[in-house]
Length: 155
Image (cartoon, rainbow, N blue to C red; front, side, top):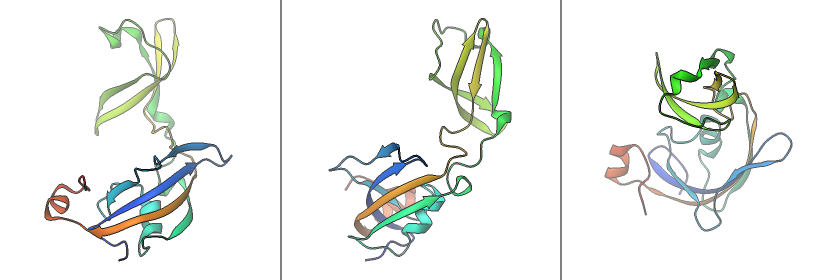
């Protein structure tokens, strides 16, 4: 069976950056399961998986515009420390959910200097070309519940 819209695909993957550094990978006994065509994975990877079958292996290079987009420097800003009321310690790497004009936005603290906190609303992988080594573990028809929820459910 081929990967196609409204089918559930299970893949083993290793994600690396341009330097070959591993950024993420599926656990050995737990492939990533997703509902194809529902926007559950980045578009560049989903497009490359279309038509593949269990046992297929592939290498996929996904440019930023088909992954998490280009970096947007307007999403990097400094805020006064007082905006973070009720939080005693703020350190780089901490993440918070902020409200933006486009809805909720996950921001990461990149620097704390005196009474200023510098945050970045870009996805951590924005602006980066992503390299995937993928093995298709399984492809099956989705259930009605999966199609209605827009995501793969536990097998």
